[in-house]
Image (tube, rainbow, N blue to C red; front, side):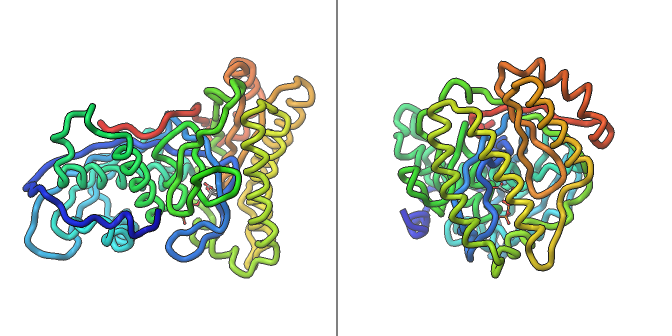
Length: 368
Ligand code: DP6
């Protein structure tokens, strides 16, 4: 498919006012997306677990209008929010060719997160995917697809819906393209995953061993402040980065290894690849110009604690990091009790206000 395939011909329905609503989860990358080209095309493929509890709930009320400029209001957790508007304006500008009804309606966007806003958890993946899905539901209504009975909705339609939702979400925020479906999503063209695309994320359809079913993700909130480096700045630092080429090759290779590991259930190699991906992402920022350290001392304390816990107990617990100081603890469901005990006894002391969030792999977004 090409981007052209997402440009609609015309709409056959004329709606004056209606409402759509979606909830969409966050995701955690195992192979990291870091570096992009124009039009939000990733420099390397990424693979993520879709989460379940950390999500954004977005309701969009659309009302027909006469003027042809973009018109929208944003409410975050019940209050009008001006701070989110520029990002949404940019998003609308990027996607208007693909959803031309954007200029015909006024949109009231009401959104909230299930996780605290100032938790250092990026809400762009769940937020942009929820909004993209709302726009797709509006498009469906304008195409009168709602009128079809569900049984008639073909597999092709659902697959087109998800692809286009992911395609639009990507134009809002790259990682958002991986939040439409679950349990594992691949975004970025690569040789290991058939039908993978730079334009949208696809559900990973390969074999997944029972070891990785319902994997747990407990997020330790080490630093709840604003991110030190925005992802846009971070991605841009990969231009002219001395190690960029090697890093992009490594991501392809790690993705290949992980697809094999997911099938075989080899948790030992899983741990090696996932932790190395996290540390490489941070290393890229330490070796860019200008350079940044995105970890905090407590991030390192936690990593060292995990390593000694693993050595002592033989546990499969491992960590991954986003472009910040918080630590995601990944572990099999069978270890939930022992890992939570370890967190409470040894790790909460390194969390801001002793806070952490328990999550696990999920199945993707839901229409409400
Ligand atoms: C470190 O998706 O936030 O979380 O496309 O500029 O919105 P933009 O970037 P964003 O980058 C996320 C980077 C990451 C790794 C990942 O999720 O793959």
